[in-house]
Length: 379
Image 1 (cartoon, rainbow, N blue to C red):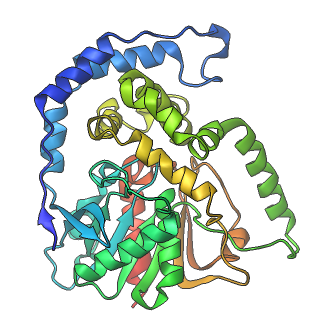
Image 2: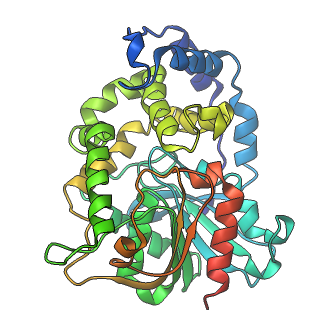
Image 3: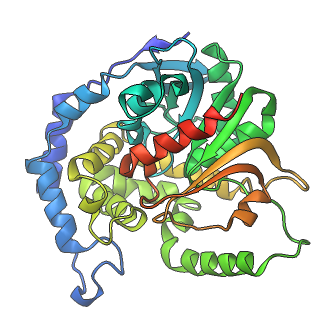
């Protein structure tokens, strides 16, 4: 049975955070490399100084507590989630899911746009009852105690969560890990899913013996080149997350450097994070990672993924549930529609004018509008 939950971080935890930031032992840097080898030193120092001296957690904590938070246990796994019901009783149920290095906080602007669209340029009949969980091992959802908490396993937990809340049929939305969880949920429980909305491709079809188009071949070559240069984090989190965790869980400056580089690289910010997100919004997400000590357990999902081969559907497998795809120009990968359609029944494709990997934070109005439009066409 879900229990109400309130975020209440002890002041001692926040004081310790500020003191640790002020005692940081900074590394050196080869100036000519700038951001090429990771988070640039001067920028990270300024951000750390702001975090320690000017950032105020309490207003953001109060903002988050305006939402309806709950905790429950599904098959032995404790879960935290937001269950924000629309004032419109006949609203569609919608499960939205985050990824790494994000959190449920990614949805802080989009929630009212989905629950009360008429107040944000939409129609009342397109409203949703929104369920936004924290993935196991992220922020207020404790980590799994045993191996095997893969994206497919999480999909099963989320399906049972929606059933516990009384939703037999519902829509799903996700990016990053959320796109994979959502995809496996639709693959394993198609009878319950109204539609799948993605802002990043989750799973792919098996194409070993299938001829590819020239556009698809070009996409795969570019993706492999990107993986070589920008995916070191994926390799270490997918193989040795525990070793990485000792440093990031002990040093807020280390955590800041690790996450700043990803948010700058993956947002549509033209090299300056503030062009996509305010420092306060970014630091609220980082602070959630720090105060809950979840950086190691969140990274562990990469290990489970790397040792499960769950990015590929079974032979001849396809997600036949109607799928909407919002393609943001600042996203990490840019698959052609034909590549996505090999794995999904794509009925709506939207090329967005701006926005990146953290779409709900960067361009909440664009994402909300596309979600509403997609589900408005489905039963």
